[in-house]
Image (cartoon, rainbow, N blue to C red):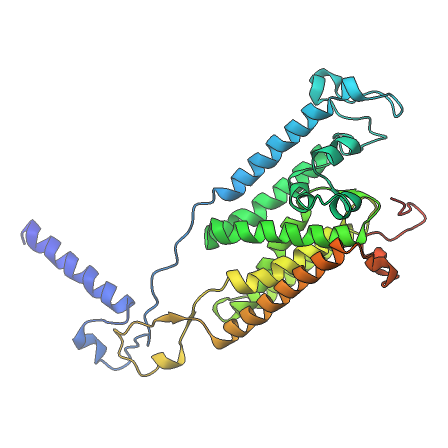
Length: 339
C-alpha cells in the first residue's frame, strides 16, 4: 500500500470518529442496533479572557500605598508620643510606631488627608469622592497583603470567565456600596481598604452560581464552600478595627450585581429531544434568569439611592437600630469596641 493510500485511510478514520463524537457518525453505523447518538450538539466552549484588569488593580493599590508612605514621612512628622518609627532604614517609607498602627503603615491623619472615608467630611464638607477614594487606600502592609492576595485568588478567575468590563464594574460598584453602608453606621471613625469591593466579588460568585444553577455539577459542594468562606470572613469582621459594614454592604451589592452581569446562556434541553443528530442547539437564557435580573436591578437601584439620600441628609441609622453596631464589633472581656 502506498504512503498516500495509508494517509488517506487514516484521514477517513479520524473524520468518522469526529462525526461520531458530534452525534453524526457514518450513515451505515447510525442504523446499527445499539448505536447511541447524543440528541444535541454543544457549541464550542466560551471564550476565556486574559486577566489584566485584576493585576492592574493590584499594581495600582501597591503604588498608592507607596505614595501614602512617602507623604506620611514618619521620621519627619512623628512626634514621638507612641515611640520611634519602625524600620527607620526605609527612610520616608518607614512605618508609624506599632502602638499607633500595628499593621505597619501610616498615621490616621495621613490616611484622612489622602481620602479615607470619614462621615463628617462626606456629609458636612460635601466630599462625596471619599466614597470611592477610600477603596484605594490601605492602613498598612498587613492590610494591603491580605486584600491583594484575596483579590488575586478571587478576581482573576472571574475576569477570565466574564471579562474585565463586568468584573471591573462589580469591583467598583461593590466598593461604593460598602462605603455607603460603612459611612452611615460608622460616623465617629475613618475607614479605608478594598474589603467591600472584595466581598462584592464573593457575593457575585454566589449569585452567579445560583442564576446559572442548571449548568453546574457538584452544586451543593460549591455553594456550601462559598458560604463557609463568606461566613468566616464576616465572623472576622466582628473584631475591633475591622469595618464589617463595608463587608456587608459590598457583599450584598455584588450579590445583586451578579444576577445582572454574570448570566450565562442555558441550553434548551427539551427542544433537542426530537431533533436529528446533526442539529445544533442554540444557547439561550431562561425566564428565571430574566426575573432574577429584573428584581436584582430594582433592589440595587433602590438600595443605593436610599443609602445616598440617608447619608447626605445626615441621618444616623444607629438611633433606629440599637443592635446594628454589633454587626461590626462585639465587645468581649479581651477587647472593647470604642472607636
